[in-house]
Image 1 (cartoon, rainbow, N blue to C red):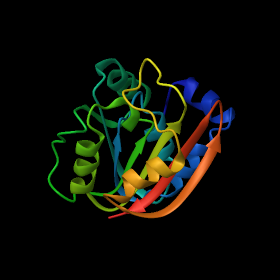
Image 2: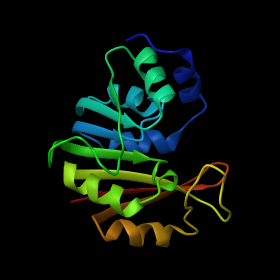
Image 3: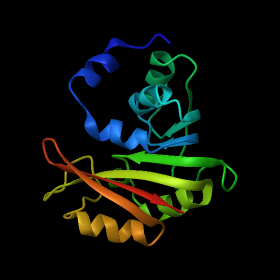
Length: 172
């Protein structure tokens, strides 16, 4: 697979959060808020993953993913109203996306609807609201409590980069 060199440079900088998240995915995977496809690129390297579909609202990001990752299945779509039948995917990844959406509850309901088994969700934990974020979580517990309304939490791992990022692995 030929991909944009920026993906390889990004991997060399050590993004443990992404690698940890991808290691929990299997079977058919939906990447909600896939952006330019970096997560999909890593998912292609995971032998436990049979197929990946990415969905994002940003046309430019989806176009970059399609160009940079030949063979990637990426589409424009709204995470609050996904065009998939129920229980289509074995696992779902939603990394650094929830903080950008207006209705997190609706997105989580949709993820629950389309997943058969496991979800991996991550968000930043910050004190102040960024220009690009609709909502930010102030604590790991706040994020865990939201996810627990939809899924059974299996594990929580905190990564410290510029600021804390938390990854929750859960199941339906």
